[in-house]
Length: 102
Image (tube, rainbow, N blue to C red):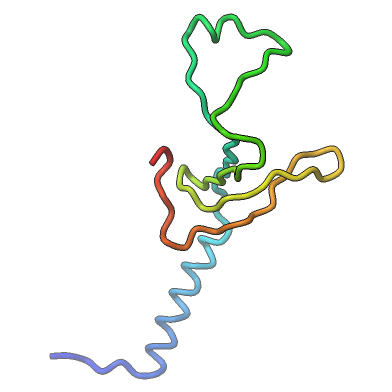
């Protein structure tokens, strides 16, 4: 037997869903901004000192990537805000986030 859902029942179901969503909105997730990558040997790592420069695989002006929980969410450009670095989002990925490293 199937039971009909009344409008009150549908409203109660929606309220429960909203409550579940509200609890998710307070979750804290790690956000990573990736400027670039490189590969180094152990010998090169051990030779690093204060002031050493590590060359990355990105060119100046290329967008940086923003990851949330290891999933690519957006691309951005680096900006300076006072004495701090920040990023300005230039593109939010809408096709579904790509896995890190993909």
